Length: 94
Image 1: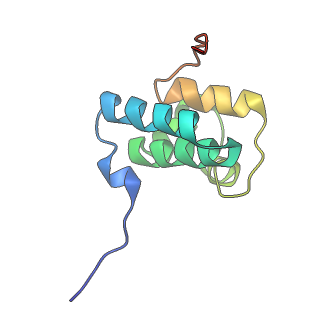
Image 2 (image 1 turned 120 degrees about the vertical axis):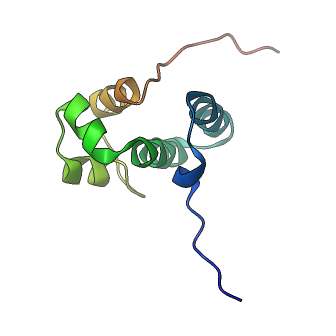
């Protein structure tokens, strides 16, 4: 039997799916998980497109959104805007 490597980016094919994925990671994951998830979304949309919209080079994007990276908050905000996302704060229900 032949198998292929699972890549979540292959399934992030709508704004709704992207939002659901990122919201789930924000709720359940840690800082590193969120950075990696944003990288998956950027890959799904296209690193070239994200690079053009953010003004960051493709190699810089790959580096900033890779496992173990510690990107600046400004970089995350640029990428979030380019992928069509935003940060919204809601009160935590007790």
